[in-house]
Image (cartoon, rainbow over all chains, first blue to last red; front, side):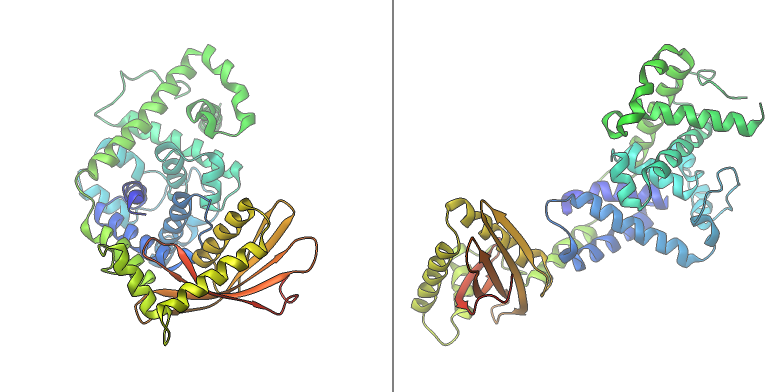
Length: 170
Length: 223
């Protein structure tokens, strides 16, 4: 479990946006995992199991904050998300372009993007972790990637060779 | 084309590109689109951009977390497990000290010779319950797994060759020496009548469950 800490922290940082809150989330995840270790099925992946626990804790935490209520259920792809506490915090800290871009993505797309794009889980594994059908994972991933691309394209310190490379933009 | 349409089309393209981006991670069917993508320079550029985005994101997250992992996290994991297993502070002890500590509890009110005899009984029973070395190792592995992972009352089944069996933890308690011990039943059936054994095992520091007492019980109730 200790060996998983770096990856758990990275996922938590992606979810929460701040290192302190990420570490709180990792700690809570480890505590819960240890308490529930009886329910871990040997031979299955410990990392998937722990990511799932973290994911649930994070969702519950967001729900408990009660400010986001409706945004967790259903898809509202083009609706502007309200500025929540996480994003306000991000705005205060001088975040690097990609992390700022990540924070601008809807929570439900962000989690998929992090699991597959950053952590390298397969679509099926991500679907299991998130309790979603694979189709939903695929579409959220595409939507999240599109938003990440948009946000980074507009970012001043462009990490790519130059603008005009991407197709299909107005 | 409205902006919405355009957005949707772009997402569809990105979903397609995802199949290339995520390689084997993407579902089988999605990979068919690969070839087409590579013939279109715009798509190819987008693909590169997406890949670069995720690499940049990963790098930035890693950079933010550079440096040692906070002590409190490592501690949470280590003390958490130690508290569960009741082995805190015992990790550096030599094996014979651990064995002695186990024995101290294991043979409450009796001498070490009794434990030795018990373990011989267990060995004899195991040989009776299984017909081959392979079956014996499958059973031993199942016992360890059941005691490590199952709550009391929930069993694990095993099957090897023509034999099958079930291991069920029954009761859990902590020994005076701080070890976790569990009573369990194991039932084996091959061809004929089932053989049922009631046993007690305790967990050593290596995470292995050592069966310390085993006795046959009235058969037929378990499987």
